[in-house]
Length: 323
Ligand SMILES: Nc1nc2c(c(=O)[nH]1)N[C@H]1C(S)=C(S)[C@@H](COP(=O)(O)O)O[C@H]1N2
Ligand SMILES: [Mo]
Image 1 (cartoon, rainbow, N blue to C red):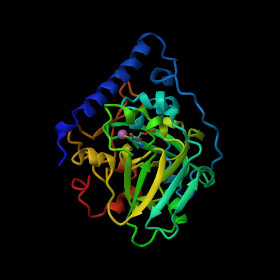
Image 2: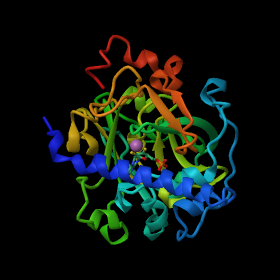
Image 3: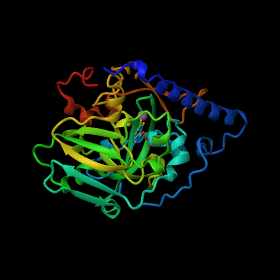
């Protein structure tokens, strides 16, 4: 079992940076500059290279798959990020992810498939794109509503013909030290490359999205350009960014967060207000924008509000054991 004492600096650095972020926003308000876009408070150096996309409204998935809740302002989604390859502070990805080259790009798909192969950027952008407005809940208890643009993961997997031995899907992020300063840092805590996994039925579920854009445009690097996973009923860390490898396996894959602290980050990581993280409650979340004076605290919903769509995947499972 992973010891909690091995990793206290994660908790403290996250709490510190989060507090610093909220304080910064408060200071800006107090200084009477509330009209300054949030993006400027969080970052400023990253050049924005996003280009507009052609996409349809949510397709086969239908109405239950797109929420009508108010969107989180784009500036907050772009400036308050987790992408440890670029640092552990929430503002680091917006400052440093522009150092990552995202073109050319390819995803290798192998393992238990009849047709292993590769998708290049043109292939990736050739999928029919649709917009999905999803709630997104981080394990650290903040949340957002984001208009993603992408295609269901099952459409990608089908092209490679998974065999009947395929029970899980493993994902890996690009690991390029020269362009990812967080991986070179001495505060580096993750065993790179960043790895995540899903059970086959979770991967094939129509809610599970490969996103190539948000807010009508291609993804900013800090949000996982050129392509990232979005699994809206699971904690944010499952939604792996900047994916370069997809492998179909017969055994449950190891994930980066489990390797770091298996007692804190399980394989399933379904959003669940009834199962606390060992170090904090999961009953409530702070919907961004959230400030010290106006935390915008709301109750967390089971499966992040997607129980009707995905609850059956976990019928009979003890969710406090399979957390
Ligand atoms: N490769 C990679 N993917 C990642 C992470 C990361 O550090 N590296 N962080 C995860 C976490 S903890 C969250 S909450 C979401 C954040 O996505 P966002 O920054 O686009 O909001 O990305 C997830 N995907
Ligand atoms: Mo997260």
